[in-house]
Length: 432
Image (tube, rainbow, N blue to C red; front, side):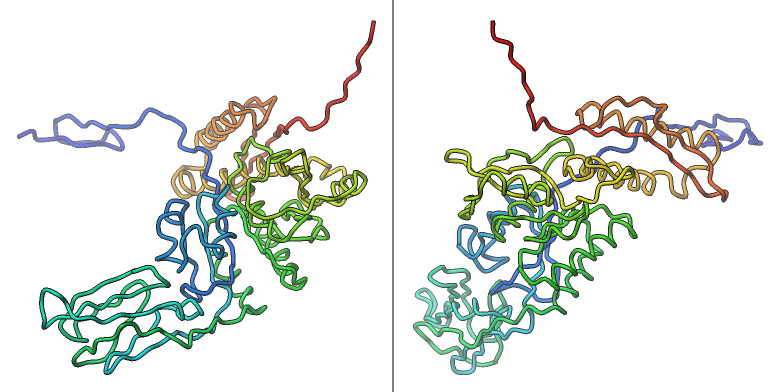
């Protein structure tokens, strides 16, 4: 056996032997973070209360019935189908709380819906003798006409809860051709409900927030939440509201035509790539869109900072991918009204914070070498943005990393030039 061996920090070993360190070749650690997550409150007839549930696009298509009480294609799921036209994931909160569960009894058996709400009234439970074992019973749960569970048991105590009902009681089962659950009631959505939702969603990671209602107080609440998250907490989210151009803020989008379009716009905004604009994008959702406006009205919508749709033949398209910011100044010019530009700036802010927190905070010494490593990281990240044409005219001198006032502080100054999509063509033609 060798006397000495292992790894070393400094060359101060006593025993003879081989001390070998294995280290990675330096390479960039940071990449662009994922987009596509929408946080949304929704009034529902089914589902858990006072809880944020996470659903991805695949789960929604395959498991909507088990999770939300309705199949993917049901009319009740239209808002979510609109969101998932662009989003990859939804953080969903049932905003109407305080409802009642549906119940039924068959002899000594009590059946209770898993969640409060009127959807529980569509549940029916059948108890029939098992054809193979006369001492057993088949207990079948139906949601509407769809069989969602079947259990073969000998008595009440052997029954297990399923995705839709819970069983209680003791003793023998009684045969029934079908007992409907009744008494299920929806709760109400209140101002306090929305405050609770925002409090809970603050701890979640998401790209875009939405509120599709018309209550001005609630819209103001979402507006204030967005401004606090972006300006005070440094979390660069975007919020989509209906008819709220008075927000006058780059983090708030005001949908003009229909309130239902908030769902589609939120999904598209969340899912849009950092180098993508929604201007002129075809609306592929299910709602009828009000588009009968005059040209001067569309011009006014843009001046007001309103996200509008227009009719182009058989298609409905996005007029201009803008937010509500209209108070232009030398410090914040018209560029900040472009959602594509804001996506680039937000991506830089969020990703820089993530890269620093994940790979540098508390791990890398704050000296010239450490700061140069961090700068190299940022340069590599910006080159990724340059390669996908999200920014232009970038070189490494545009980023300066300096020591701060305290030993632990790092200061980054950078110049960035986001790109935007072509929107206006001014063409002069000379005719010979």
